[in-house]
Image (cartoon, rainbow, N blue to C red):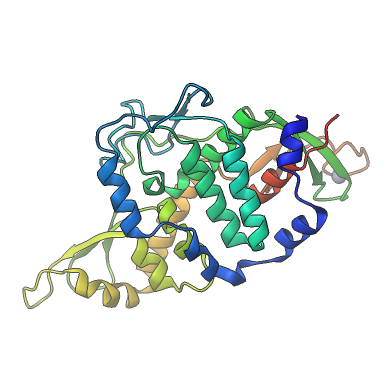
Length: 318
Ligand SMILES: [Zn+2]
């Protein structure tokens, strides 16, 4: 524990900075997110080995079950038939990534990109981690945290009603169980568009980890976000022209309310039904104040990833 603490103990000023800085410096992320070209190079040199290179001193690999199964990653060869990959705990290398980010001035965008970098390093199956769905990120990272540090951590929650504060111990494995997609759930999701006088079908993906910066950035407009997650649009225009990529921007830009809602609902359904939703953590019989109307009742709380991470990293020894 002592060793971990010295490596990973941001100062109070660091934490305050992390909490205060918002998405403003979105451009910074470009310096550490891999470009498409790099991603492609990675694919080229990983075709023959099931695992990335490790030596005998490397931490033991353990199995991690992916949310989207194997069937949603036809290009990622080394995911097992059960939809599993191998991961390991963090080492000083990955902890160093976090420090590197702190030195640059950790804003939310950089924070999320740094987590992606840590995950990529801890995934030992020879896959391009950035090509995994963003829905995998939270379960993967919590699993890595649990392997690296203790499973159990104490978080502070306020009662919704009387605002009493409670220290609640949560288990990063047992209390955060992710929901796996059934084989019948295939990405991309097919959405027939009704707003046009001619038949168009939109195939919508969930964002990949590599799309995260664009997808979450406040500087990306609706068109930009949707554009990153469209697999394809099929259809034929009234003059017989087959729809191709040159039509996509106009089609997305002119979506009517009903079709727009369908796209948003599809994305929402995925977040709600699969993976781990950190805005939806149930705390059992939370409030112990007998005069409170929520006494002994379950309460649903949000526990953002940055809060979990800072809690784990700054944990006092006791
Ligand atoms: Zn209460």
